[in-house]
Image (cartoon, rainbow, N blue to C red; front, top):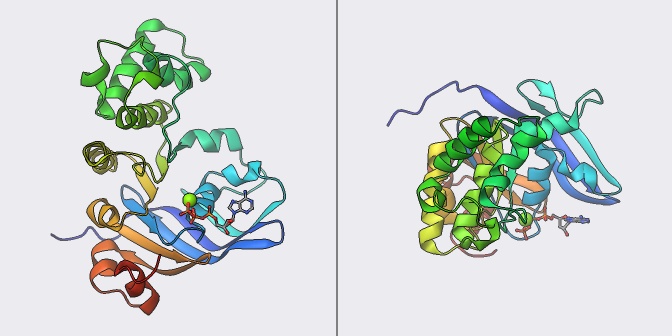
Length: 257
Ligand SMILES: Nc1ncnc2c1ncn2[C@@H]1O[C@H](COP(=O)(O)OP(=O)(O)OP(=O)(O)O)[C@@H](O)[C@H]1O
Ligand SMILES: [Mg+2]
């Protein structure tokens, strides 16, 4: 299969450093994330994967005494520029967490929440959005007869797909996922993985995973993090079959981590 060359770079990270107080959690990270690809972040616990993910939608801003250096551009715009509307930024970058976190409301209302917050009131329009997003999240057939049931009444895997539908409803163009399948059984994991592969046609996806088979299955590129630095990044097939750094090889062959 011939890989498409010259894909547009969606997220351009240049010499990023990040600090929690005096503690430096990320050092000199430069990565180019092309659009319409799945970009995986792997590495042992505590190496900075989640921290890095949260720098991409400025979610770390909410943590006291943190500091960012370097530059992150999304679509050529410096997202840490003081003029950036952070609320708008977070709307364009959806996030899915390790533990599915549906709102304590119905399946319908979970998905309709974002559109309503954006001022859409028309019932018919909301129904259309909810159906479209639940279909896109491969959940519609399982829930179409019980849209008024609480989101929390769904199985773990269904809840995670509901959270993905909720993200899609705000029409993001980047989706960040932090170990979205780590709490799911193999069948539910497979469904979410299939979904991620479908979603990349429309979105750019950055996913943290501890599961190297998962990274190999679904991602186009992978970055290996260790102690807050990117040891190696590149096409997933190459990184897993022919790593250039000893640390990468040791990690992917299970020598540590
Ligand atoms: N809110 C915080 N305040 C202070 N230090 C933090 C905070 N969150 C994370 N850290 C520290 O930053 C470093 C990176 O943590 P991070 O959560 O990004 O790692 P991770 O790669 O996602 O790990 P895991 O695989 O366990 O989720 C760790 O040393 C962690 O202790
Ligand atoms: Mg983490």
